[in-house]
Image (cartoon, rainbow over all chains, first blue to last red):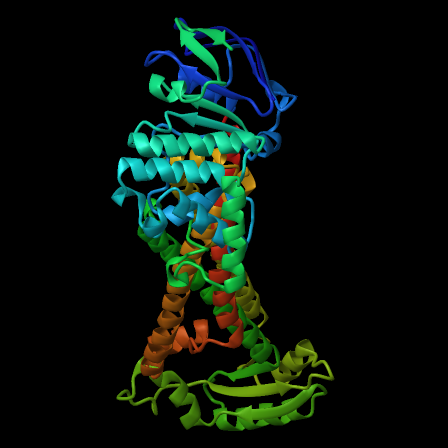
Length: 220
Length: 324
């Protein structure tokens, strides 16, 4: 599904942030991406999302060479990926409902066809009574749940989550991890960037990708 | 049971029962690009001013063109015989003889000699009503209406008049017609140039505003990309906004132009009896807007709205294409 071969990234003329990154994400796999703060977890996720171009190396996404993709192909591939941003990235002028429905709306779906699913998903993540609230009014945990719901509403083939439980209590963190595992069982590959060891310990079968000094170590 | 299966089934049930979230809170067409992020008021003002100027220019050009056609039609179907006072000759007899001679010419539909009083009345707007013109040698005019079917040979008429009436001359208005036509064409050309300049200035203003809007909505654009929005979809969001702004500005500008013409028409009616008012009346007519001018103003306002939306879409599309 995703393959990195000797990928390197530097900004400007500085030292490489990521060096010789080689790994693959298989279909229906589950992995944690971990490492100390500033190790490059978010950068690696942005590379997978094609939001950044590598300085060197090869990235293959859903069997396509990332460097050969045109804008239309990139858009099509991104529609197969759900993203949970560490900094939420909600649109402040849209309500919680409208933010979660956004991926469906930009695909041209009629609102009447997805209203029920969006509403139910919001209720499931505990935002049923916050649907028509604007994001600036939401708490950090509520925003986190809204972002997760937005990533899941399209049932992506690949889910990239950057610190998805960073702003929630342990109870909701377990509930969200359960959601991710259910998603995994449904066929989605999951990549969770986190430095929460407790979270990682709750899922025994997950692969661990550890970033350190710009290099990636894989622990199956 | 899978969580998603559970969610999906409940959603189906909701559709079946037509139970949904309060529909008044759902805004399916809520703009993805917030209106407040675009310098809307300033752009509406710019578009309104440009539409107003363009409408005034176009309206004035149409009025002048229509008036010009009117003059040419009117004047081209007439000639004038002027009898100058000559010492030793009876000007009234000369005028009567000239009128009779003209009536016998082929191509003359009607002959209207101006009496002394009527000739003096023609001079009053310039000389004033208080001046006694009875002792002044006022020329006599004879207006000849031409037969549209038969062409009058002005040279023959001139020759025959010269043989019997020394002070008579024929004016076929050709020189004045040519000058009128050149003036009207010049005015229309200048109006077209001004119109083009106004349009260019407006396009540049819209382009500038679009770039500013994109810079201000950079994060929104990035989020839209990440959730799978195509460039075409994103550019349409901006296009929709700018089209609305253009429509609003166009309506204000076009409406103001119509109001300006209406005011000018009312004022010109007050001025009509004065010399300057008569000149303005000759130049522009009575400023009364015909359907062609209304239609032109409406087309300009609508066209400017469309151009505003189109320009913003092109700018956004190019910017998105250049994003890596």
